[in-house]
Every structure is written in structure tokens, then in C-alpha cells.
Amino acid sequence: MELIFTLDKIESAATKFAIATAAYKVFALEGEMGAGKTTFVHAFCKVAGVTENTSSPTFSIINQYITQKQKIIYHIDLYRLKDEEEALQAGVEDCLFSGNTCFVEWPQKAPGIFPDTTLHVSITSIDMNTRKLKINL
Image (cartoon, rainbow, N blue to C red; front, side, top):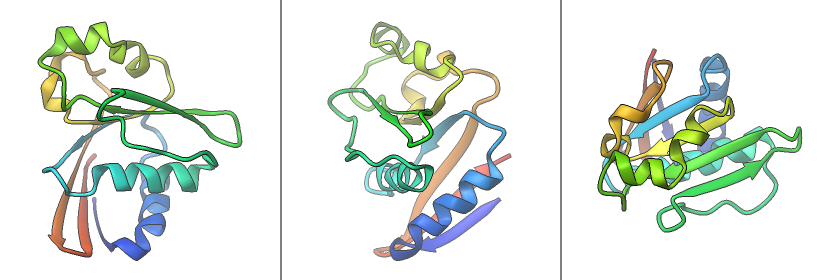
């Protein structure tokens, strides 16, 4: 499945994504720096009912958000980690196997810790304002 959207329609794309992937909990987000991975997660959180401010987990590694329905969404960024061991020490695996929704940026840093049911999603920049999200169902 592919979604092509402009940044002003990102919430609509996030809603479509949420409906199409409702059976999944863990999403490995792949894409180059600046492709829009974090921006997409923020849009997903908004449409899922997160009312608090969302931010990039680049330095914190793991951000946790609570929706209005008291569901947890984890946003994880492995960019600064060296390997799977550092990811384990940071508690990433606990999030991945918690049963909560998890979005993980830079999953290639620790590929061996993901559940078999992980959905791989790639985000690419078509131009300054347009993104392509490919879901590997």
C-alpha cells in the first residue's frame, strides 16, 4: 500500500494509515534524514487523540504519549544508538513487546529486537512538500 500526500494533508494520510494498519502495533519507520518520519508520527498521535505536545525522541530515545482513550503510543528513535545492546539497555524491547503502539525510527540500528509482527514502513520525500509512505503489508 502506498500513500502520497502533501504536508498540509498529513493528518488525513495518518488517519488512512491508522485504519489500514489497525491490526499492527509495532512500526519500523525507514527513511532518510528529513524524509518526514517524526512529522508523520506527530500527525498520527494527533489523529489518535494525543493532546500533549509531541517532540522528537532523538535525545531521549523513547517518548511516551497517552491518547484521550488512555492508550499508550511510544515514539522511539534509535539514531544515536550503536547497536542492539544499547537499545536493550535503553528499554526499547520492553516497549516493542508491551502490546502498545510503537513507532521506531532508524530500526536498522537494532534489527534483531523487533517482534515478527513488525510492520515495515518507508517514508520518502518526493519534493519539498510531498511525501510517499509505503506500507509493506
